[in-house]
Image (tube, rainbow, N blue to C red; front, side):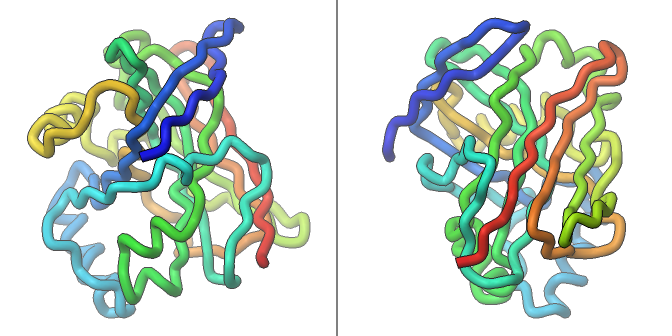
Length: 223
């Protein structure tokens, strides 16, 4: 895989991180029975059922996008606010927010292809995992869609809906995923009213304990 080096920001200081792995963990809801129900709902819409849940989707490292504009093919793509773990060269772990932008039309053919075809926006600000781990379930994910300037709340929920970080790390170990130079999109929270295909998305990770947040906003250019 290609090796990418990017300058992130943490506590008002820059930190260059090199990574050559990227994955997405899907169907990572903490209530796995609810996850199975959701899979059945998607199956009725033509989305193939995964072989396992949670499901692991390897991604190309070049898919990680720090741009403010995302180029896509077609008009049925949408983002999702995701908690993201970033592992540096020493194995230190950081937390940020990204968007699992996905082609919903292609998803009915192949989930893997639907994820590969779209780049994955990622914020450039990081928090140390150790600084948020003791109040992990209080962290919140939210997303807004924008359509011709009209803003709509798309997602808003604590990450208590997603597997705890300890369980995510255990899952990574079971799957023998790299714990250095890796970027892992770890899951999302429920949509409020189903998929929306806007011309821009904004995703935010909020830490109410320290009263801070990380936001990534990007426009969508349809080719």
